[in-house]
Image (cartoon, rainbow over all chains, first blue to last red; front, top):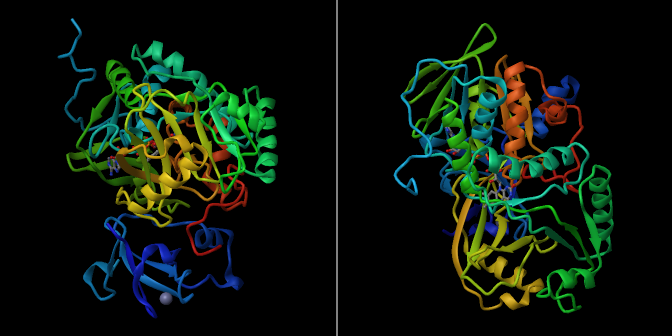
Length: 88
Length: 406
Ligand SMILES: Cc1cc2nc3c(=O)[nH]c(=O)nc-3n(C[C@H](O)[C@H](O)[C@H](O)COP(=O)(O)OP(=O)(O)OC[C@H]3O[C@@H](n4cnc5c(N)ncnc54)[C@H](O)[C@@H]3O)c2cc1C
Ligand SMILES: [Zn+2]
C-alpha cells in the first residue's frame, strides 16, 4: 500500500519524500531543572505503542518544513487531528 | 512409524499461578523457559503467546547466524550462541539443520576495509575465526561475484567468517517447544497478556484474556511488542523504535552460492537454500510501524542492489516476500535487564535484526538471571542504564536514530 504524508505546505506526497522525526515528546526539558533521567528520557525513550501517535516529520525532498501529524502505526494511515483516536 | 500424528508438544489448561510467566512465544521466551527448566529445576513456568509460537520475528527471519560482531561485549555472547546449535540439536533430539557454510561480508571502499580490519582483529582476539580477504580471494570463494570496477561501489575486499551460516528457524521454535513441554513448561497459545500487577514494589500477577495468573517473576520477551508492553503495562519507557523489516526469496536456481554473502553499502544479503531459492533481505522503510507490510519500493531496491554484485541473478523471479517487526535500539545492541521497574520484572528485547542468532544463549543466561536474581556477568553490559550513562555500544559505526535528534 502506498504511504502518503500530508505536508502543510505541499499537501499529500509520497512518504519516501519525508524523514521521520520521532514521537512528539512535548517541549525540550528546561536546562535549569535538568536531571540525567529527564534528559535520557527526552533523547532516547519512546512509547512505541501500536496505534495512533503524534509524531514529527521533515519534508526532506520537498519544502524543508518540520511539522507534526497523527498516524496510526498499525495501518500507516494519517488520522485527522480532531478525530477521537488522537486523544491519548 | 514416522510419528506423524504425534504432537511434538502438548497444550495444557491455564493454571492460576506459576513460578515464572514469560510474555511472548518467540525464541527468546521459549529458550528462557527451556533453560529455567533444564538448568534450574524451575518447571512451573508458563509461556504466554498472543497468537502462536513463532508468529513474530522467530518465524519470519532469514535464519542467518554468525559471531563476528564488533564489540567485546557482544562477541562472547554470539560466540557461545554459535557453539550451541550442534549441542541443542542433539539435546532436543530435533534437527535444527545448522549449515555452517560461512559468511562473507563485502567491503566497498577503503573506510569499510579499515573498519573490517578492526572487526576481524576483535573477533580473533576472542578466539572467533574471522579473516580479511582481498577481492580475488572473495571471487575464489564466490565465483559469481562481480569484482570488476563496473558496479557503482566496486568490491575492495571482504570479511570471511567460516563458522557462521544458516539454521532452520522454525525447527528451533518447534525443538524448544518440544524441550519445554517435555520438562513440564506450559505453552499457552492464543493468549494475550493485557496487564501486569504489582504488590509492595514487586511483580505479583499478569492479566490475560484467559484470566489472572499470579507469579513472582515476569519476563517481557514480546519482540516487536515488548517496548509497547514496557511503556503501557510496566511503566517503563525504552529507547526502541519498531520498524517493519522485509525479506524475500527467488524461484529455485542451480547451486551458485555456497555462503551467506552480505554488503553493508548495498544494504542487502543473500544465501541459497538447499532447495535452490535465493533468500535475500533485508530492508526497512525508515519510519516506525507495526504493519509488517511489504512494499514495491523494496522489491525494486533489492532487485537493483543484489544484482550489482551478483549480476547472474538478473532476470531471476522473486517468488515470495514477507515482513516482520524489528525492535531497533540506537546502538544496535539489545536491552537485557532485571528488577526494572520492580523486583521480579525482567526484559529481553531490542534485538532488531540480530535476535535469531542470539536467542538460545540469551535464554540460557536470562534463565539464570531469573532463577538466582543475580545478573550474569556476560549480560551486565546490556542493562538499560547505559543510555542514561552515555555508554552506548559500538555495534554500529554510527548511531541508528529514528528520532528527531540527528
Ligand atoms: C525479515 C526478518 C529477517 C531477520 N533476519 C534475521 C537473521 O538473519 N538473523 C538474526 O539473528 N535475526 C534476524 N531477524 C531478527 C529476529 O527474527 C528477531 O530478533 C527475533 O526473532 C526476536 O525473537 P523474540 O523471541 O524476541 O521475539 P518474537 O519472535 O517476535 O516473539 C515475540 C512474541 O510475542 C508475542 N506477543 C506480543 N505481544 C504479546 C502479548 N501482549 N501477550 C502475549 N504474547 C505477545 C508475539 O505474538 C510474538 O510471537 C530478522 C527479522 C525479520 C523480521
Ligand atoms: Zn512540503
